[in-house]
Length: 363
Image (cartoon, rainbow, N blue to C red; front, side):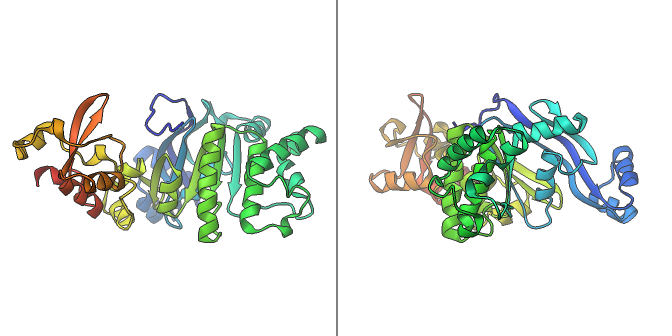
């Protein structure tokens, strides 16, 4: 189930006004931020402290894959480590399933990490002297689960990631992609509700990377898991994520679906990021359609009821194919049996060219 547009879904991860400040004078800098509202630049100038994450707000819903994207040094890896308290926030509140993690004692935090949050890093850190099966069940071993039970659970997790025939092998016998699958199986074996992924596929060859991206999305959705996925690659974020947060210099610049970010970038930085992204299979009819009244004002000689029909979720590629198979230069967008808009050839060209979503309306 895709929950990207479901604002009523349960919130599993809730971050409010999160700051992470590094440096010898970090406590004084935190106080200044809290009392005087200093900016990242002012913190550096006045206290010689680096702001890794600056006033970040985000929510991850049940069943959602939430991608955090940014270049090296943008703060994305710092942010994901704050989510399970591998590092402590300087300011702000982080809640997992409604529980503020800063208030958990050491035992409660270990239990939350073991039961609610799985994590897979770029360096999967498999134990070289243990088999694939033993590595996949390692988290359960730490929790004190019996060998019989953890082996059964680990085998099931390895089967989910396509490694059921490799249980007795060692990490040195596996390819990079297979090692990442073991890391994912280890996370899945604990049956967490939330999986944190920190650039897990970035070191892999492009073909293997795309394959794992598709497998990860399909597996996460089929199991009903929520995921926070860190990447520096916008195409990867688009391929995997239901929603995407774009970070720059510790700041979350924009949060939205891939379509929202590509068609309505928040600023020039985001616009530059998305400039090279193909919109053919990303932008949908609902983003480029005119209202019926607008179409009639421009083309009063045509009856919208006679136009070929499509749906609001049809992408530009589908719309182009439909248009090529008709003599008309427009398509009626139908939802719940009613025509809710019209997509013209001109508006499709605007979408492919990457022009502002509303620009075609006045053309």
